[in-house]
Image (cartoon, rainbow, N blue to C red; front, side, top):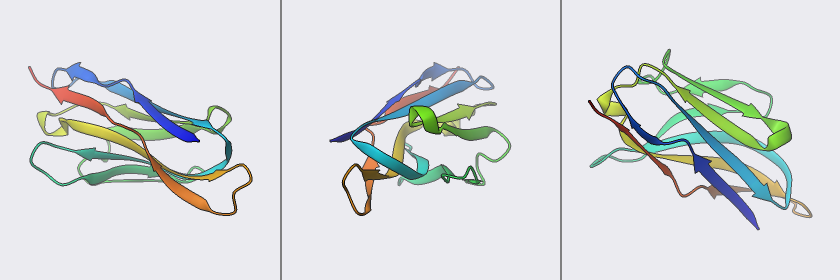
Length: 121
C-alpha cells in the first residue's frame, strides 16, 4: 500500500506565503516524477508544477516566479513553496507521483487527498 499525504494548506492573505508538503509512504521502491495539481472552484484541475527524479522542474505560466517545487528523495517528500500569493491561487492542491512499489515491475500513478489553500484578505 502506498499513500501520499499533503499538509501545509490554510488561509493566507494576498502577498503572503505558504509551504505545502507531500510525503509518500508505504512499500516504495522508487519515485519518478512528482507533481502538484490544483482545482479551483468552478474550474478544471490544472498542473501547477512538476519535478523529475533528477531535479528538473516545470511550472504553469500562472505560477512562474512565485512558486518553487522541490523534493527530498531521502524522505520521499515533495514541497511547494508558494510566495506572493494571489486570490486566484485559491484551490485544493493535490500531490501526484509516479511510484514503483517494492516487488513491482512498473510505475503506477498515485494521488493525495488534497489540501485546501485559501487566499483572501
